[in-house]
Amino acid sequence: MICEAAVAKQFTTSEQELNGSGDESLDPLQEDKHEVVRGLVHKYRSRVLCLLTAECASYCRFCTRRRRVSDIEHGRISEGDIERWVEYLRNHPEISEVILSGGDPFVVSTDIFRLAVEKICSIPTIKVLRIGTRAPVSAPELVTDEKLDIIKSVKQPVYVGVHFEHPAELTDETIEALTRLRRSGATLYSQTVFLSGINDDYDTLYNLFTRLLEVGVRPYYIYRCDPVVGIGHFIVDPQKERHIMTELRKNLSGLACPTYVIDTPYGSGKIPVPLEFWDADVSYYRDFDGEPHNVVDR
Ligand code: SF4
Image 1: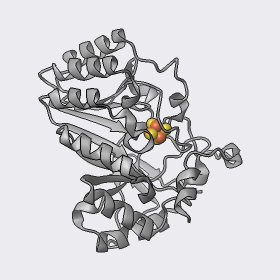
Image 2: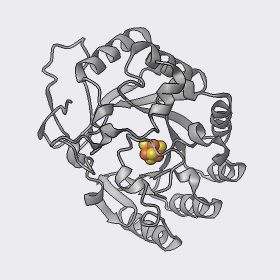
Image 3: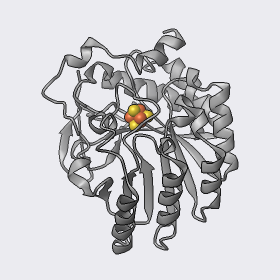
Image 4: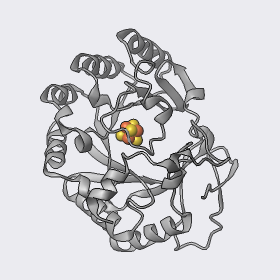
């Protein structure tokens, strides 16, 4: 596929969004159920997700959180909400890792960004800050010097997870934003989703992961697309995904090869998929709680 079309398809509405199936859900990862304080999702014992805003610089059509990413008013986080996050984190010392996400945390004002980062990182039990973003790709100008200075001032390690789908997204402007993030002291990793007609081929992913490593981003996860209502047309045949990942594992540098996972429905873990090196029945898997799930196919 021509690169521009592969990038555009991520953001273009399609009539196929109206075709649902019984396996789809608005919230397959059950985040709303685990939202213990407005905007704070606590699913795993030692880490939480803080949704700083419902605004995003991207509006991907396949967004797992599309039920709330477009609901900007409802998702707007206030200073009071951040105070309540801090209170919750202080009352739960078992939480050592906070992931700021959204929407996109780089969309919010410098003041809100500073307040969230500084307040959260002032808690002694918080040892790691992560920030999930696609701003370096969609709107590199949002990676401002002011926000980089805030990251630079944090004493904990800061890991910035950048969402990439296609090597054509590595423009000069994007690489420059990534370089500035690295210079602020952040460690960069990537997250990718298998998407039909966009990146479900060996060459595209080989180029993407190789280039990411070369520009200082460690490929971390590639996900099977979540079964969200309206995005079934993006879901790839699981055997095809597994074969591509097997070939990538053979040929990529180990540092460039992300872990291929299924994010379980009901929010119970990211489960690595065994590659073709193993003779395994991959039609179902067990989540972190031992519950079996069939792989959702189209
Ligand atoms: S960048 Fe992430 S949060 Fe924003 S629309 Fe895309 S998938 Fe959703």
